Image (cartoon, rainbow, N blue to C red; front, side):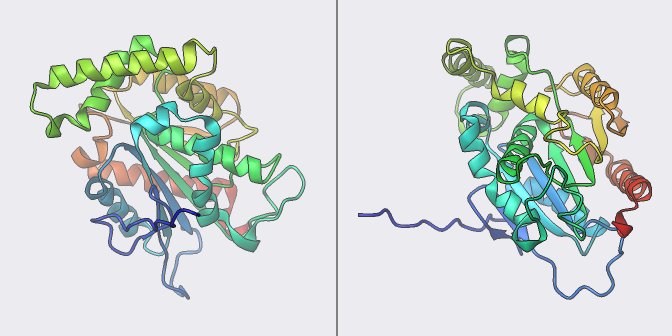
Length: 310
């Protein structure tokens, strides 16, 4: 006897979004669009930070709606535990709805070793928040490459907000356990330090059991590398790193190291540094600076790549 199909529920606080899965939601645009700017993104793909609540991510949805009112938005939620410890095959499977939402249908055909001829209409802006969002993004790149071998997920710009950090586990366990504890501390009766200690113990034991003892590459190491791998991450897409030197979860030096590596590999890289802001807190504290940086980077992207004429 087959199990009943459970339909995903719409996320509270995200009006107009349709759930494609428990983690992937989409807000289509009204068609036909007659007054859209021909250089604006046709799709904005947002990867939320670890365990982000819909009401918090909705602020980024609203910001992009003001910036690019005619763009379809695809929103991906990224729970921390599955991101860290699920095998790549499961992570990629969970991101297949993203591939379909952004590049599904007849607009993509499997041909050759380039995606340039496959999608002449889509202009995609990808926005990734924190390392957990980066893990979901890397799984999407892998899922696309599995479905369209020798191809990279087509996008014109990649925004990296407070990510990526170092993939080395034990030097970062205090920061990562803090990030994990922040998501559940409000529901527990004891002091935050107890919650963080429990999170650190769980993460440490899980890391040993899942990655170190079997001798496998961790999710964090794989995902950090994939974003800078031209065979999976389109080297024509420009990069914008958004970060702060006061981030209490991700070291700013690690972000700059990743940006330098991307530049050395041929990616076009820009950065916006915010003063005194916490992890994924730049938009809340400096909204004008934040959205202006994204708007400028997209304008530079369309100018450099002649997106409208592709």
